[in-house]
Length: 178
Image 1 (tube, rainbow, N blue to C red):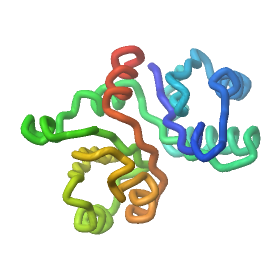
Image 2: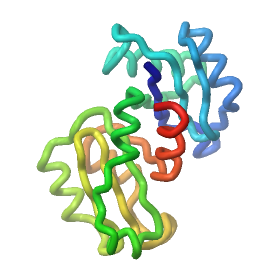
Image 3: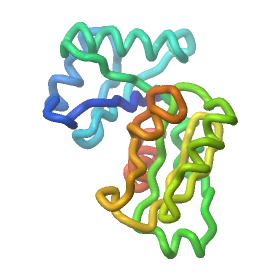
């Protein structure tokens, strides 16, 4: 089965990592079937039943911290989980018609319900959120430069690491790898 690591802090904020190097780091760490998808920290690999969950995320994070010299959160999903994320339709056709963008924030665990309520209560009128398990779907009617909502807001309010990808990227990944 394929797995995917969604990496936070890759090729943002001046921290540039070539995808060839990222692939080589995963191969050196013993991963097989390693491929990268666009230059935003999406790494697919063969996943075994023994290597899943928080221990796999910590293994990847330690490997990347040692190699890159800074912390990189790794949020791992299996191929079937990625497919389910891509296929989930949390927003109505009317909402989608008004959308400028639809993103998904990958979270380590399902957030505390009170934290999600606080996030939703503080959202701008241009944004709509939908939580399903460890994924936070975010529809915005304006561009990211025009909203105060961001991955940093998700992390602060929910109290955990997250990383955001556009739904189009997720669907392309699911078609190719899930």
